[in-house]
Length: 523
Image (tube, helix red, strand yellow):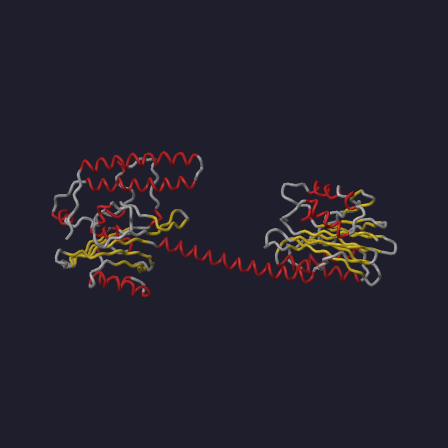
């Protein structure tokens, strides 16, 4: 049987003064950090202040006079026994309560706000109240400054119990009845009947717990789900320890029970969120891989300049910086049966597999329209119908397409919301006066006006998608003017060299959106 430790009142008073002074300093730090919006530091101060406040509450308990009634004297003969086993789980308990041979330092998890914080010491006041004095909020308000924040309520209910083995007396704190949703009139539950009040899946743990406490006479702990009288369940962590007489005879069993339901629910929610995030990442990687493979399969990979009738052509495609942003940019050049040449470029809005699939559809459809001999304006008209009626309702795209007659060096063009093409001639750059046209997929009956360009040998045409000229913090018009200013450098260069010059002079290294550029030198 353990004796209650004695404390000198003067020492306790001095200790309370030092703790109060320290808490005041922490409160000042909290105010400073809060004013500076240093959220993390302020939160740490809040937790520390709460812990110091609870330490003051505990010291006040030690200073409280011992009650003279027999029940109080009987209780004081076993000072805080149920909590001494719990003390090893809560390092904030003063060292004087660690004399029991079974005690060893441990930590518990808790929840602060929406964040799971592992290994946070529990507050000593919540552990050191006698079992017949339930934990009720903060307590001892005369010792608490209004400036000190209230302890977090998310840590869960803490209850205590004592089962006397020699007299069959059972003492439960009020929190035990709340935890089990049990009417106090019905009385407490015997320790050996505890397995009847847990879920079947947790019976092995509870049966082992009871056996260790009652038969093996060793401290034990377990976590299990309590089946309450209202049909709900609560997850409970129990720490128990048998109390032995000097000759080793078991006299009673003390226990601390902590409601960890919110903690487990939070952990389950976090685990589910992590699993969902992992699945989403895997799906995103798979979609990116499929989109990239589809794009490589349908886009012409002209690693060097190619010769189409009357034209020297070079292209470059730039993927977006973010791996997941495979886009719908496309380009095409094809000799047609009537000896003309199809020249086209477009941008399917969006990213990922949907944009790549849409780009594939538009590019293939445009080739089919071109083979029929349709002029550029008509090709865009039918392309618009395709986007509007054969693709998802939110699908839109831009495009520019032209039919080049190499015999007459005439290029007929039409544009659907696409950036303008640039013409370079004799060392000067210009933007042909060409109607913009409405974006594909917006209007059911659009009209796309055509432009007829009479070209000369040596002329250079530059087509590009918006990803080439759209940069955060830069105006598109400024980027286009930068392209036009390259005219002296582009003069006389072949198509591939022109593309290299454009790429190097724009100074881009990472593209927020994918981009295409096509250079056509008239031969």
